[in-house]
Image (tube, rainbow over all chains, first blue to last red; front, top):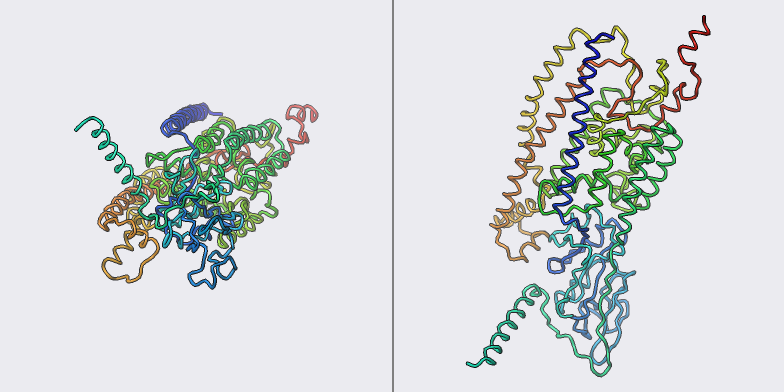
Length: 189
Length: 440
C-alpha cells in the first residue's frame, strides 16, 4: 500500500478515537447533569379534581379499555343524601336502585341504607368505566364527593398519556409516585 | 387586654386563616349538604382505596434485563457469531420488552423525556428513563447497533416477520433514511418545548404490544407489520429517531461487525443475504477515485452552510403551524375567536378556561411566549434538516475505497444474517498459504 494512504488511515483512526472519547465524555456529563439535577423521583399521572370539567374523554381516550380512570368516592365530604344527584337520573321514576332510575350507564354505584335519612354510595370499581356522568351530577348539585382519579393498579403510566394529551382543562398532572392520589377532601379526613 | 385574650384573638385569626385557606381550593365543591354525624347506627366513614403504582423492583428488573440483553447481544454477535442466538434473543425481547412490559419504557420515547429535561428545566427525569436512553448509546460507541440487533422490541418484531425481503433501491433508501433525522428533529422540538410527545403518540408498534388503542393506530400497526414482511425493518431504517442517533454514534464504534471470520474472497454471498443494503462491495480498481471526486466534495462542502441557513429560514416560516400543536396556543386562538365574536359556540377547552376566571390577555401573553419559543425552535429544526441534507450529499460524494466486503458502520443493525452466509464461517475455505502450497 502506498505510504500516503496509510497516513490517511491513521489520521482517520486518530480522528475517530478522539470523537469516540468526546462522545463518551459528553454523554457522561449530560447524563450526570440530568440525573443529579432532577430529584430523580418517579412520577405518575393523576387528575386534579379541581380542574376536571367532566368532559367524558377519560372513558374513551385511555389506551386501556376500560379506562384506567375510575370514579373515586371521598366519603369524608359526602352528604350521604337520600336523593343523590350522582346516583339518580335527573328524571327518575322512583327513589330506588332500579336500573331505569340510575345515572351510571354501567350500574357501578351501589346504594345502601345507613340510618334515616342517610344512604351510602360505594363505587364497584371493576364495573366503573370512568365516564364521569355521576361526577358531573354530584359536582353540579351535591358536595362533589364523587370525582375521577387515575387508578394506579391499572394505569400503565405511559410516557405520553393519551388522556392527558386530549384533556381540555389540563387536569392531568404528574405527581410524585410516593403520593400518587389527589383525593378530594383529604384536609377534612 | 390580658394575655389570655391575646392568645384567643390569635387563635381566632389563625383559625379564620386556616378556614380561608382550606375553602379556597374547595370553592368548586362547596358543601351544600354537610356530612352527617352518625350516632345511632355506629357507622364509620370509610376511606377510599388507593391502589399503589407498580413496585420499584420492576424498574430495577427492567434495567438489569436491558443491561443483560445488551451484553448478551454483543456476545452473540461478536463472540459466538450466531444468528440463531440473535434470533432467540429477539424473541425474548419482543415477549418481555414488547408484549409483557407493553413497550414502555423504551429508549425511542425516552429521547423526548431527555429533550424536555434538557430544554425546559423543572422536569423530573426518572433514573430508569435516563438509563434506558443512555445505555444503548454507550453500547453503540463500543459495539455498534447491538440494541437494534436484538434488544429493541420494535426492531426485533420487524426482523422476526421479515419473510420475503424486496430490495429497496439505493436512491430510495438514502432519501427515506433522511426522514428519521427529520423525525428526530421534530420529536426533540415538540418535546423540548413541552408541547407534545409525537414519537410516542404515533409509535406504530406500541398499540400492538398493548393490544389496545384507537382504530387508526391499530391499523397503522397492522400496516407496518405487513410492510415488514416485504421490506426489511421499515421503521428502523426510515423513521426511528433513536435509530438516527445510533447511526451517528455507531460511526465512532470501537468494534464493528466483521462479516468474514478470516478473510474475504469477494464471493458477495453476504451482500445477497443482507436485507438492509448495508454491505459495501469491494471497490474495483477502475472505480476508485474518479477525476471529478474532489470538485464535487468541495462543492458539497460549500453548499453545506448555505443549506443550513436556507433550512433555518424555511423552518422559521413553519413556526405558526408547528405552534398549533401546543395546547396553550390552540386555546388562545380559540378564545380570540370567541372574544371577537367570530365563534359563537364554546369548546370544552374554552369552557374550562372560562371556569378558571383567568383574563384572556394573560392567556394571549402566555401563547405569545410559547410562539416565540417555537419561532426559535423552528429555525433550529430547519437548520438541522439543512445540515442533515448537506452532510448526506457530502458523504455520498466522498470517495471511499473498500478493500473487501464491509458492513456499513451506521446502517448495519448487526442482525448476524451475513455470518451464516459467509463460506469462511463454515470452514469451507482453505487459508491462502495452504492453497498455494497444494498447487505447487
